[in-house]
Length: 445
Image (cartoon, rainbow, N blue to C red; front, side, top):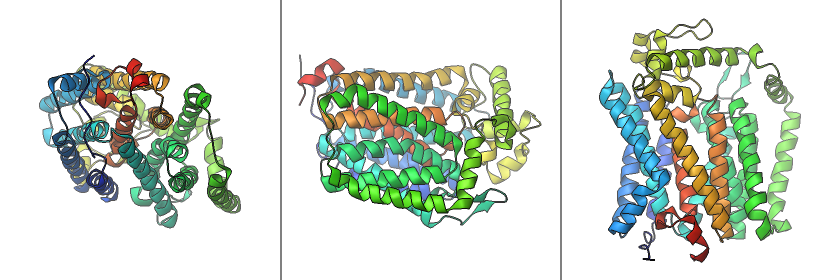
């Protein structure tokens, strides 16, 4: 069998990491209002282009490798989504609005390809996992430091940090928690494993304090998936955990639990939100979501094949009345920019309403192809490190898929960026860059 060309040399070096870190910061720190929302789309696209060009310019790309990259099921789904979104943009009645959402998808896809083919080697993939743990830990610390800077009457103080919204923070923490846990058990250096363990405790505490039920449900699903994957693919190889490495996170966890017990007002608020799961229709937020979902369903029925245009749900939903989900007028939304209150709070319904059922089918195909490829790779992989990364990425995508049923976070660049990064880390762990079927992984060093 003809050998496939080597991966990009040193693609996980300082330039790649600093470039991605700058991209993460630009997406997270810009304000959540017009015209900065447009600037986020531009930043994500520009950063994705720079990373992709830098990665692909440093590797060898013979025809065999290009063919393997184009024909990989996950890559085909990504390219199909971009094509479908491009068609939706071309057909959009408001291309100046649709353009920003299309750029978000393009930038995310470029980050995905840059991650798969830029973090191919073990050392560079470890740096990528360290970066995720670092960013997630810092995000949690910032959220706790800035705790109480904003709030709503009757809801107490909000934990939102740099994301300035607890739903966005919850979505980010939800998708990064499995990756941070995977890093905590797989990184080579003991000190870095300890740092990742501390980051996992911080992320878990911030996730609980965010009081976001969609993120909680997603995290439960993600952690359950990680447990199953560990039992099936990692445990048989043996799990060795040094007790001394758990000392620092155990102390931090004890302090967090103690602070939580004494924070009576906040623990009561979280308890009320947890109790709301038993009677979801009794909460105004759930009734509002049901109204938005009903609006999205009517929009899908009106345009089932082509949708109303990529990125146009916030504007078009204003034409659909529902007593539980009252909306501003289109002119008001266009004047000040769309907010969270104009989102469907369901990624699948909003995507179908914007690009039609074929577009939704492509996204679901991407989730399916990613899951199947990851599971096949986990079954054939010999490297314990890559197994942990693959399992963490698959668990993170599972968490996002569940939280997306009720969260608006994934329509915002600072959260969707990490979803695309997770796709890339998972496929990098599966050695997709080599263009080899999973049956060949056992003989690959």
